[in-house]
Image 1: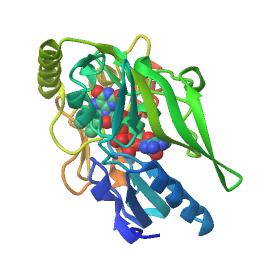
Image 2: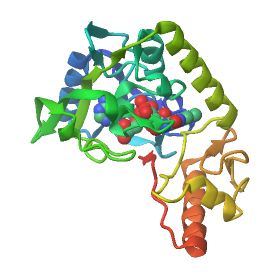
Image 3: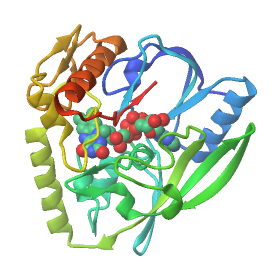
Length: 286
Ligand SMILES: Cc1cc2nc3c(=O)[nH]c(=O)nc-3n(C[C@H](O)[C@H](O)[C@H](O)COP(=O)(O)OP(=O)(O)OC[C@H]3O[C@@H](n4cnc5c(N)ncnc54)[C@H](O)[C@@H]3O)c2cc1C
């Protein structure tokens, strides 16, 4: 298949800038091409992994012995009144800015990555989650080396806090989604988008990261616990717990996946010892 590259550094495909070589990598934006890429991986007996913007993934510095399929860069969506059918490889930020006559997505400004990545992890901010806007998700299911096209209703997606049916099932590939949004006042929507972006810029640490490492709980903020455990600023190799937001780890330049995993291990141990709370990762580790 045209476009398949060999030995490609995954650090280029993660906002963390960490990751060794993928044996094979292909970038696609059309659902038909993602299907062909998966068929190719199955034909070659390779394990495969579909990613979007790589903004919630810690790749191993050892690399990935299979085919990484990067599904991003589309700008296709189709408006039918309040229902908007979107190619899931679209950048979430692009979508927020393009749909500025519809209200409901303003909170998502500044979240890196694709719509598919956001659906996978039920991304959210300012108390809203992407699941609230989902009407339907189109999926490719890989089963017994066959690819089946399926349509999932919102209920089928099993959304929870930073969770969905897709999060731990790599054989369910999101290709497009129907969002339900309400018409709104463009001027007001633009103002809200701008305000949300300003708030984000103020509170979000600078540097290479993959967002919050751990999930918050019903009655605790992971960042606050890490801070209370005295771990802010702790550094291993080039990986550092952010000074201004303890739930972020920053790659200062040459961090390895082991540096990050060591920090994660220390955080979990200290927080459990001090507060009897087991932190759970929000990010995916490959
Ligand atoms: C600075 C910064 C700020 C952030 N702020 C927020 C925030 O406010 N709220 C929030 O929720 N998150 C936040 N994040 C985390 C991240 O941006 C989101 O989780 C985002 O939605 C991930 O999208 P992605 O395309 O980058 O996914 P990726 O990182 O590429 O993938 C994440 C997971 O989804 C899977 N996946 C990707 N595409 C598909 C597909 N087509 N089908 C099936 N599975 C797929 C991958 O295999 C992986 O398991 C932040 C990250 C950064 C770096």
